Figure (cartoon, rainbow, N blue to C red):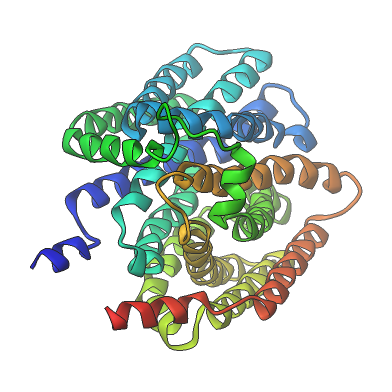
Length: 406
């Protein structure tokens, strides 16, 4: 019985942390689509519209090493609480902001809050999953984040359409308050995490790990999957930032349905991802997922009707849902209590880097190219990911054998 409890993934604490991670991501992604529209309405050029996202994610990226250190020193729950308080204050501040420079300042501070929240919550989730079920567990956790990444932009566009920009900020403030309330009730989880942190420090006299952040990252084995995640998110930013502008330029109404159908694709992908991964391995699953992503980008590139955008949303959902799950699992599979924070910081930091670079570079490329050309380029980057999966090992099959042996 104890072994079954220990191997049970779907605990109340794990579900709560997964829900919190989803809410944090939804809050951010609402602003990813709404903020470019806001600053353009305030007078900023469309080519610079994505810079609001760049500022936010660069701040998060630069703060990642500090987030990992703070999570380890004070405990993941407390670090997440600080990030949640910052989120709440900033969403309320948005309501009274009417100047572009102040918006950029708030976006930078929001990146710091996001860094604290996502690093801490990712470490909490990793600690709750048995090693032999890491792909399965992080698949569920990753699915929650992937769904949030897709549904957030749709919610942001819907709120702007029906309630204006204040509706986006009020929704973010309410969700931030709920995040804080849930964190306050994770008291038992806090005690377990503090015990885990203590164990991770016992090998060093004085209780503090003296290893550098870079060494912890290398030891965790998170670098390669994190780089692939960065590439995928870099391409995805072209969708979250500029898909609404593409729809406007081509007369395609309600492109937000792309993100809605995307969510359904990701949810249904969970029906077969685990079985395919155990039977054929992550190499096969990752290669297939990247092909679906390429097909989705090509559909968007040549879309002239809403059904083409909708079909792209479904394909992208299936591809991204599978790909993100196995990347997230690969990034933390070999982590220990000592380097868990570093592994999660690098994985989420890679996403930050991809978002920051994509939001800025795609806008710059649009000055000399078209929407068709940038989405063809995104399809090409997905092929690069396919090549990566042709040469990497079948981690999922190995893990499945470990699980059966137990």
